[in-house]
Image (cartoon, rainbow, N blue to C red; front, top):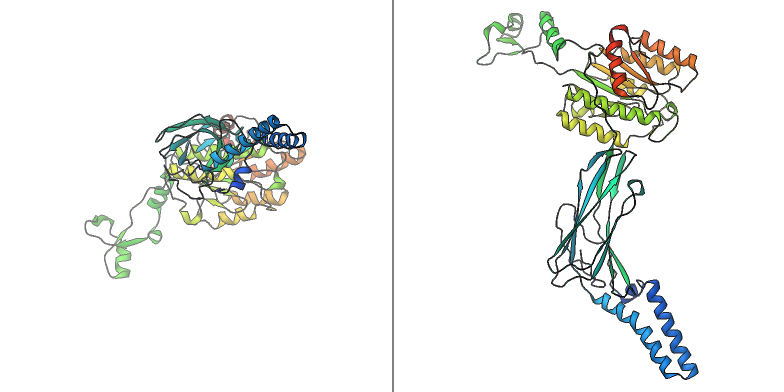
Length: 448
């Protein structure tokens, strides 16, 4: 960064991936005069007034005082205007993705890359107010080639993606007559993700005895017509030759190898604006967002392949991103980043989510864990049809969004369709509800 007032040149240099150069380059005396502080303007006004009074009254001593008062801020403007500081800066976040209500540290580094020492420097980083007050630092003097590092902490109770920066550098003369501001252009992004809770290992509805066991067993029990053969390769076991396909194709064909498949789970989050009441960190919707994040991370750690699905039909990872897809840590990062910015949608119902499930790659979608808001009779029936696509299904539903009788009827309908229903109120501990899923799995959701 070129911190020199009036240089009109970009002579800065980057010192790291987060470094930036100032975008503001006021290079004229007019811009320097615009940096006069209240003290500087007061001195200038007093000097002019004293000079005028001295001329009217014929007082030479008063004229000298007026000239002194006028000259001091003008000299400060000229000196600060001609001062050239070449300063480079960088910013580092640790970590760049942080759960809500936890702190992240921001480290700022300032390098004086010129051959002259700097004067008094004041730093201010632009930070959204939701992260706390804007940090300000004062550096008295930075020697040629010197370096200074400062840090501050940010914290947010609200999930989201927040821009930090640009960093502003304020130059001031020793008398405080003039202040000039320069700004770096670089920003950094802090992602505040929903808080997750550690969940206990439980036996979930529809879960087989071992990972991929159901899939392997289905291959073993498949008839000859269900086998997908492939051509013989050197080294294949002759006991795996599929003679019917060999006769049909006129070449040696073998049964394809049984590949173990990871158990799958779809986490459905209902984001319809009409389905939720209230807002803020203590609302039912925010509880559902945090619950969806906790379930996704927990099942990924257990070896599941997990995707996030919303009522808009959006999927993370996307359908083309490979539902069997990415590594667990990468998938967890994608899902948490998506949940950090998820907001209420204007969808009238769950039809798009149903279509996304129907458009799956055939068969069952594995486990379905849904965080539902208020649903009408039509949407409840649609959720019942979604259950047909899953080997097991859990539904977290908030209490108190509708009349008690209608709420019980909705839960009864979901249970009759095969859902394990877990009612909650904001503030309930998710691990306790998760244990109820274990106990309720064999009884079709008697919990709650």
